[in-house]
Image (cartoon, rainbow, N blue to C red; front, side, top):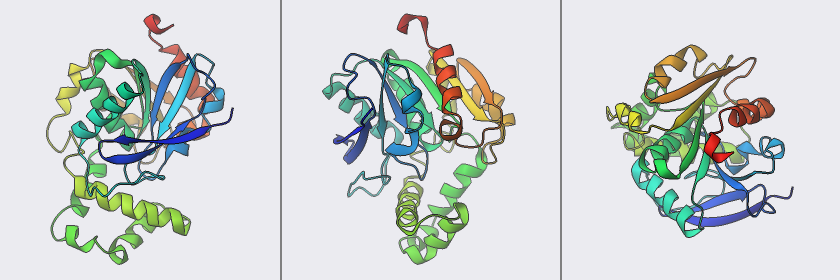
Length: 265
């Protein structure tokens, strides 16, 4: 397995995409969306354990990885339409979606707007439901913080506190991502807009996965998230933290296969 990297326009973002299985020409596509601070490489440990019926494309979201743009903010619906347009241009119809944390906001919107193109929605430690998460984006995107975080000198210490031990290059990239995502609030939050109930409009199967030892999104919060979906299965991975696709990739694979819709077998 030799991954290939290429770039496509997604809603005005020159988007980095890693194709982990370019040799699998007729496989079913899995689109992977990472969380805040990640990149298209976040799912690299999951890729080798996925069976041959699947072909994984992992996307670096705006201001992450090598994705570039002059845009200063994003909006869930607009970005989702851009993602769907890119897939259509690539002649990719139905997709499986595996999304983590911040990326799950986009995945849920994709399933809602394009249910006929969503074979399976798998959200791992999803963002957009737990109040403290949106509080951070709301605070940083407020006035006068909006002006202050234009300069890294104000935002960089916060990033270092949020994610300790980041290498310099990664810290600078994460600082930029946090700035622009905060400027995008509340356009990137159904919760802040009071619209989480919209998600019940997606009637397909949703698989919600949380780590037993996740300190950012407690496993006990799972029932509150699941209630926003019409048909949601919940799985808790024992011993896992916030990144189970990194620490427990085989368990993620097994769960994806376990809940794979019969029509996609």
